[in-house]
Length: 262
Image 1: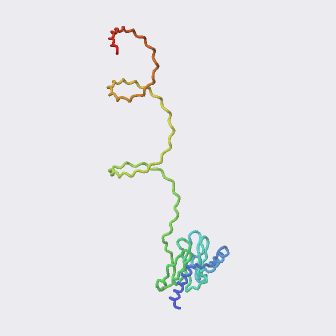
Image 2: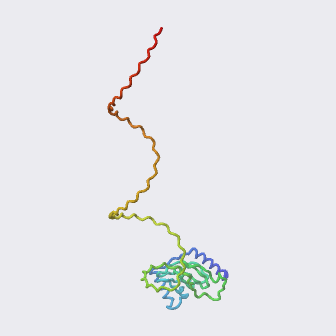
Image 3: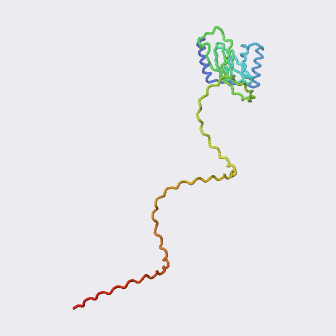
């Protein structure tokens, strides 16, 4: 298998591992730290990058008080506040790991191989390799760095105390702008509670009597009313006095005697 075919196979393996995030056993505690540090002291001279005698690549600091270390085989060791997100130990590599690059958030990292292979863990994303871009390396990879993209805005801090109100500035001499249109009348507010009745006031003094007006003209006679019902008969009055005797009448004459019949 040629170098280019092997590089493509490594890229495909790395992409698959970045999805399933294979986890290896984390080395922690005093015993693990002592084992790693003993390896450092045996094969590493302070101030010199670790070489093939130790299999350890230089450490990468994590945000806060902690860091990671990575071996040429891709085993990652976390210390302090740094968290373990996985490694390449146990996976065949086409070239040794030469560095570890932490993400800006410190919640993941990339392992970089000498032949340009990149392996992402945690919140690190895989963006490609020189081989996947069609580039042919003329020398081994010697270093790498992460690009600090836009971070997530932090939470708003507490609102500070309101400062004292400043003195009013001088009144401007600009022209008064035109009066704006009258706004629509607002809705009537609810009727307020009726207040308590006040104390009744004192009765005022009686005013003077006015002058009598002049008598008006007599009105026209009204129509004759209908005849009323007959009243009850009154009691019989006393007998009147006897009138005086009138003069005696004249004596009549003697009539003629009639003839005797036969």
